Amino acid sequence: MSINKEVKRVTTNTLHALKARGEKISMLTAYDYSMAKIVDAAGVDVILVGDSASNVMAGHETTLPITLDQMIYHASSVVRAVDRALVVVDLPFGTYQGNSKNALESTIRIMKESGAHAVKIEGGREIEESIKRILSAGVPVMGHLGLTPQSIYKFGTYTVRAKEDEEAEKLIADAKLLEELGCFGIVLEKIPAKLTERVVKEINIPTIGIGAGSATAGQVLVTHDMLGITKDFQPRFLRTYLSLFEDIKRAVASYVEDVKNINFPNEKEQY
Image (tube, rainbow, N blue to C red; front, side, top):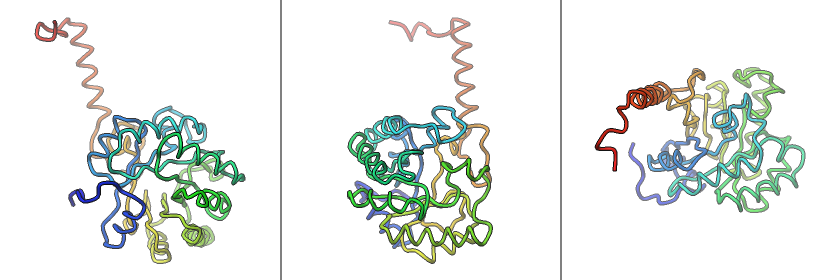
């Protein structure tokens, strides 16, 4: 399906309209100007400035170390590149858990200093007050349920979540709550496809899946993963469209060889 040229700027209302007419929502990550420019030009509906920048850009093992200042830096870089997509920014670990005042202050900084369009926040009932405070300021909020990477030390593993009935029922209840609070959408990460189907039937707001099957209103992947830049991450849900790690490595090796052999620059490449 080609890009909808009529949509000059994707908003939260656009996502609801896409869902209503059965058109899937595309979402990818970006953390810098150059990549965001490409992703936006390709027609992606939503760009997530994810706290996965902690892993992809900084090399940390988890998403926990990235700071609010760093998220604002990445978000600002992305916003400057984007003409069409809705830009959603992750609230990083420690900026909203257990302190709704801090959640609002962190969100206001992201919105004012980066120019982003919405924030994403992990969790359900336990962060209800933070969501309420953010929404009271008129900031759109996207929820995130299932595997929530900021809680990795609580889970102890990145395995599929909500396989047991108790956790599945809590996830459904949390999804309903997020909708009732006013979230415009929810990311469902690494949960059984059958559970996703149940969630989609229970709520009306768009759901975006990552390792959650095809029943969601849209899909999200980490751009560096789907382009094959990150080499050692190969979960079942990931489809790689290129192998850029090897392609870039070969290109750099060729450059090194040309420099060593005095083949670069040649006469045409000099002034």
